[in-house]
Image 1 (cartoon, rainbow, N blue to C red):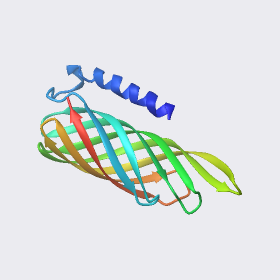
Image 2: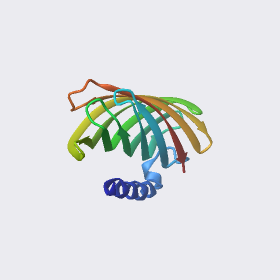
Image 3: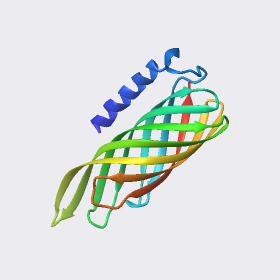
Length: 174
């Protein structure tokens, strides 16, 4: 948990650097902060994501680099309790103004804590995970408030098959 707190502080301080006009050709939006939730079908759980995005480009062709942290907890067939925390970096390209379809690709790094309770003993195994994911989304811009439903397909280093996630981000641009 302390890692996520430190990353949140980093992202908030990084977003203040993005207010520099050199970072954006379209200076009307220089950064955005977002919070989101998503459902992962393979894990049958809901996760939460917090991040910052740095948009650049022009009014109708928008590019964006995003950095985020996410956490989620799930129950699985193998363990009583799984806890995941991760960091992600992604790149997105979109076309449009008020309603903008976007496509992107991202890299996720994290760790998984699998915990089980047997014979009144609570044991946990920690695994590290890396994944690459394509993402498709549509951004609805209502002034500085943006709603972004998205779908991702994770290809990770675990022995499981690729998994899908669907979710919704709410962004505040400044």
